[in-house]
Amino acid sequence: MTKETILTMKHISKGFAGVQALKNVQLTLRKGEVHALMGENGAGKSTLMKCLIGVYQADEGEILYKGTAVNFSSVLDAQKAGISMIFQELNLIPHLSVAENIFFAREPIKHGLIDYQKMHQDATALLQLFDIDVNSTDEVRFLSVAKQQMVEIIKALSFDVEVLIMDEPTSALTEKEIDKLFELVHRLKEKGVSIVYISHRMEELKRICDHITIFRDGTYVSDHRFDEITMNDIITKMVGRSLDNHFPPKTAVIEDEIILSIMNAQRYGVFEPLNFDLRKGEILGITGLVGAKRTELARAIFGADPLDGGEIYVHHKKVTIKSPADAIKAGVAYLSEDRKLNGVAVRMTIRENITMASIDKVSNQLGVISHQAEEQASHKFVDKMEIKTPTIEQLVNNLSGGNQQKVVIGKWLFRDATVMIFDEPTRGIDVGAKYAIYQLLDELAAQGVGVIVISSELPEILGVSDRIIVMREGRMTGMLNTKQTNQEEIMQYATGFKNMFAQEYAH
Image (cartoon, rainbow, N blue to C red; front, side):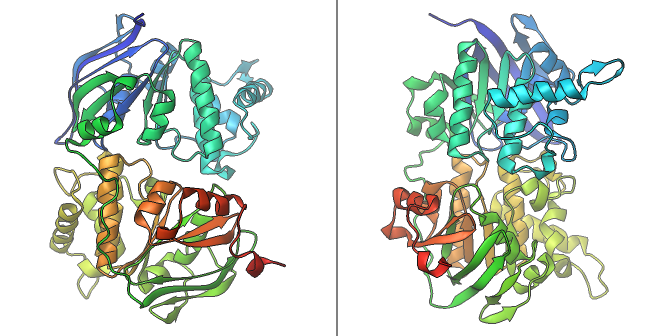
């Protein structure tokens, strides 16, 4: 029996400053189904949904919601009509409480004032319904990224929702939290809620999706029942070519020369003394479950957070790193997990972003910046990174997530860093762009750069790394040779079932 159609988008087109983001795109969503949108970064998935909910106004096309033509002028208008979106990038107000974020701009009123008691009661009921270990009174800025993501989900569900759009909702969640999310998705389906699901994690789609629509370069490719198409066919349609191997062959040769040495590095209450070396041409993976303190280690090496003890050597020379400026001077670069917060300046141009860490390289002896030198460098790395943009003067905020990530990498390539730390480099990146990032990691290693990759995706960490450090709650529990290990063994070290360094850390 064919389900009732709740949403139809026809002939949708949208352009931005010379970039045609959508060209004659269509989507049909049925009541009570989970419908996946698939495509590479820049394919137009998020843009189409933003046209639906009033963030953008489509240049052309028609939207029918429950049989009536609609054109929402704001997100709030869409929410009032029963359409909510969980955005890929967090949109919470850090200094407000969980309850204040959930009910922002629609707080319950009593005697002309905000009824905080009712607001917290309602928020607590929603949190308990989803079994989230967060208090309604907690300030959002003190929550982990994973818990902030769960608050975003609750905020969207707090409306009387009929269509729920999820844009990469699991990118910062643990497996347990993903299981909870999918349980809720199934309950919402049973209630007749229609869900548009945008994700690059194909293994997730098997668990919850009924239909799939595929986009490529801002155009509609095809629509399928999910059980009638293979994963290889999806990938081929997304990228316009077959990707028989998800990871490129390794060309880098690991040399004996040690580029980076970390000796007894520690932060009190965060991670215990850690020791490891990074060799020229090596890709060293760091993995572990949420709370393993992988990012905290990377930030400390880069000088963003202080070390309480230990030593760092770059090319056998002891370096003092107390700030990111010290790290950059020493040749150490860090590509943050949250690219919009710590990686790029979204309201600046591609040119400005690529050169911002290397002002000395585009300035004369008097410190005056050469616009010509900036342009030459920017064009070089836009071409090298294959960044999709009509001009280097494009604001980074107008780029897709994958192209923003490429801008960050271009910035550090221009800096000539000899050690590059990538924290979740493919978070929110599609399969085609992932492959390009993996190729770049291998190219960097082949050029003699020491590469550290932090990733929560075990297939990725196994696919790109030469050795793997496994961390658990601020301890290094394993140092594994990639060729001699597997996902099961890594999980044993990550969960504490095994601990290669138990004696070293025994008290």
